[in-house]
Length: 220
Image (cartoon, rainbow, N blue to C red):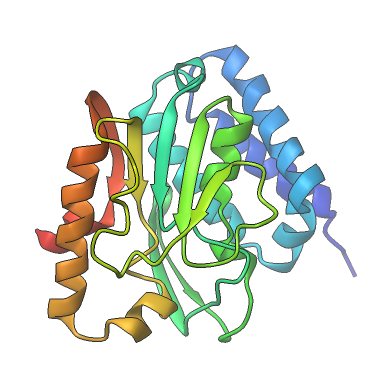
C-alpha cells in the first residue's frame, strides 16, 4: 500500500505558486514564505489533514499575482484584509471557491477547520507587506497587525484613517457561516455590503488597488 509523503503536498503547492510570477527571485521568496508558514502555523500538517487548503492558498496567491506583477512591489505596502478569517472560524455545510485553477466545491462538517484561518494576512506578512486583518474571530496569537471587530455593525471601520491603505480585499465575510446566521435576509447582507464598499473607497489611497471585493460583487 502506497503512502503519500506529506512533504510532496508542500512541494507541489510551492511549484504551483511560483508559476504565478515570472521573475526567478520571486520563486525563492514564495518558497521561503511557504516554509515560514509551515514552521509557525504547521501548514504541512494542515495540508495533510485538509488538502483543500492548498486551493485556498492558491486562490489568494493568484489574486496577489493579478494585482502585483512582481513580489517586491509588496514591500511595506499597507494592505487591509476585511473579514480575514480567524482561529475560531467553522466550516459551513458546503462552500464554493473560484480559484485561478478552476472552481472547486468543498463540503464538510460544521466544526473547526484550517481553511478559514487568516492565511492571506500571514502570506502578506512574510512577503514583506504590512497587513491589517480585521475579523470577529480570534486573532490574538497572530504576528500581523489585527483588530477584532463586528463587521455587521455600521461604522465598524470608522476608526481607520482616510486614504491609509495601498490595497484592500474582502473575500470571506459573505460566505462565512457566522455572518449568514447573523444576517439571513438578503436585504440585510446588501446593507452590510454597501457599508463595506463605502469604507473601501474611503480607506483606499488614490493610487490604491482593490485586490478583491465580495461586497462589490454582491452589489452588482
